[in-house]
Each structure stands twice: as C-alpha cells, then as structure tokens.
Image (cartoon, rainbow, N blue to C red; front, side, top):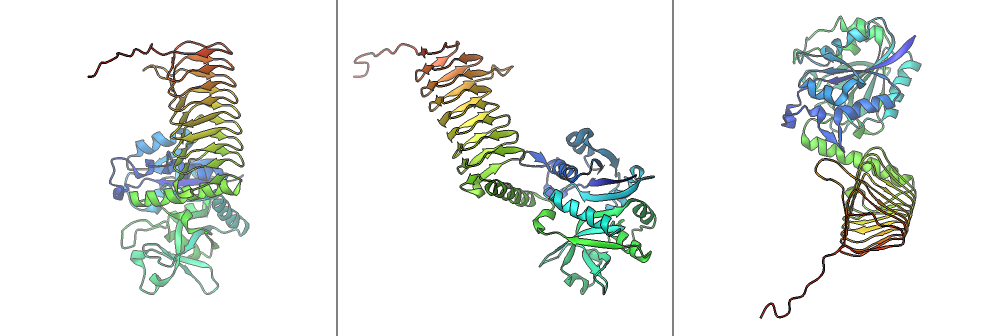
Length: 418
C-alpha cells in the first residue's frame, strides 16, 4: 500500500531572532510558526508528519504534542542530515514523502497538493517547488537541461557567477519517492563550501541514475517566505492578515480597512457584516449576518454573535453568547455572559466575572435595557424585559418586567465650599 508522509524540518537555531525561545515557537496571530506549518500539511491530506527537532527541542515538542512523530538532529549538519534522522520512519514503506520547513508558515495546502499530484501523475522520483525571483540572491538556483528538466540545484555559496544570474530558485519544498530517497541518502556527502549534507544534492544523484525529476513553480511567491528574524515575522504576519481579510471580503463581509483589521484563524463571519477599523477578532469566534463590529473593538475566543448584533467602539467581548438584534454600543466589557435578543447594553457596562479564583456567568434576557455604567457581579441572572438603572451595581438576580436600582443615596452638603 502506498502512502504519503511528511518530514517537517524543525531543528534550526534561528539565532537572528535574538530570542531565548526557539524561532519555531514564535507566533503569528496566536499560533506558533511550526504549528501553522504542520496544520497546513495536514490540511493537504497528509496525516503522518515527522518533525525533526534539535535546538530547544522541548519547546517545539510542547507546542506540537502528540500530533506528530519525532526524530532528533543532535548536530546541525545540513538539511540532508536532518532528513537522515527521520529515515527510521520510512523504511519498508512505499509512496511519497514530502519535506518542508517548520519556519515557512503560510504555504497554501493547495500548493502542497499540486506538488504531490504532479509527482504522482508523472511518476517523478523528486518533484521540487520553485519560484521566480527578480533578485534571487541567497537562494539555491535551479539548473535545467536543454529539454527544460531539472538536473541540479546549486546553493548560492557554491554557484558560479553565471549560475548566480539564474532567477529560478529552490523554494525548499520537495516531494520524493520514499525508496529512491532512501537510496540517494546513502550516497549523500558533505563535499561543499559549508561541509554539510545538502538535501538539494539528492536531485543530481537521482538524475545521474537516470531517474525522473521535475518541478512546479509556486503561483504566489509570498507563500514560500520563511521567518528568520522579527522583521520577517512582521512581514509574513502582514501578508497573512491581508490574505485572510480579502477572503472574507470575497465572501460577503465588508472590511473598511484591511490594513488595520486583525482576524485570526478559525473565525466565521456572516454576509453583510461590517467590520470597522482597528478591530481584532480572535480564533473560535462566530459572527452572524448583518452585524456591525467596531471600530476599536476586541472580540475574543468563544464568542458567538447572532444576526443583527452591534458591537460598538472600544468594546471587549469574551466567551459570550449574544442574541439577535442586541446592541453593545461602546466602552463595555462583556465576559462569560449570555445575552438574549433585542437587548441594549449601556455605555461603560461590565460583567465582573472573576472572583480571583473562578470565572462566573452573567445571564441577561430578551428585551432588556441596561443603563450606562452598570456592573454585573456574577453569578447573576437578569430575566426578560428588565430595566437596569444607570450607575447600578447588580449583585442579585432580577425578575422579569422589573426595574433594578442599586445605588447609594445621594447626599448634598450645602455651602460645603465657601
């Protein structure tokens, strides 16, 4: 039975990140680089992923847990050497093995699928992902024969002046025949300027044996960007931000300012919803149709907004369910609460959901009116059709159709200042 396996290279030091952490556990939109890379691979239909870990490997393992298998590269002797550490998982298997980098976090699953499909359909023993760069400095160059077939990859430090002019570069993503990769790895040597085992040398070894190799060119060069320092981290984050926002816009969501709207992964937003600038929407949020969010609002994990909900400026919502037609216009915090339909939450209202040890729920019914500057000290339940007077601190449940007033008596001292 043939299968497809992936090897994720995640052993590098990443010294340019200037960090006490592995660069692979730095985050984009709350998710570690290496976790993103693994999830992308699995979305492409590859269930078995082997992570090759090394430097600060415990940090990488803490992030990935049991979602992958592990191989350890004790010495940093190149990409070919890293793949050698994972061969124990390949022995006796037939099919394809994909090799990717854990610091390339925004490769599209569709690109991986296209690479595997070409390799399988053309019966290629090695299929590369390549890109065309106007300035290819720093990348391995793709050398093709007169027929256009890939014959070799030459690393920048080993390239001649003529070879450095080549604009087609190696993107660092490979699909190999498992058995032929195992055979070629036995012939790999560190005869190069770096004294390392280059995985790229596998292509020449296979070509010298007369085996078929090929390539596909990535359609969007931003997909193959890696992260080696914090500037690149910011660059990749902005690319992902724009990609996510444009996808929502294509599907019927209005985003007024894609440069200043931050929508994390795993968010659902209904059609005709408007997102105003400087709004952040974190993962595990569901927003209905015809909602209005922001500006300057913060929708956190576990939030569910029904249709026609309005979340205004400087509002934070966390782990809350808010019913159809309800409004939280501005300057409020609604955490760990359930709010019914057609309820209005006044300016400056908060749920006091944390007692220092545990989180507690606030429940507010349908058709309620909450005045400004109200504190709900949870756990507390407000039934339907209730009015809460402005400035109240609510510590007890309120029955339906009631008016709740919880203020100290005002005392005016006449002639206090003369």
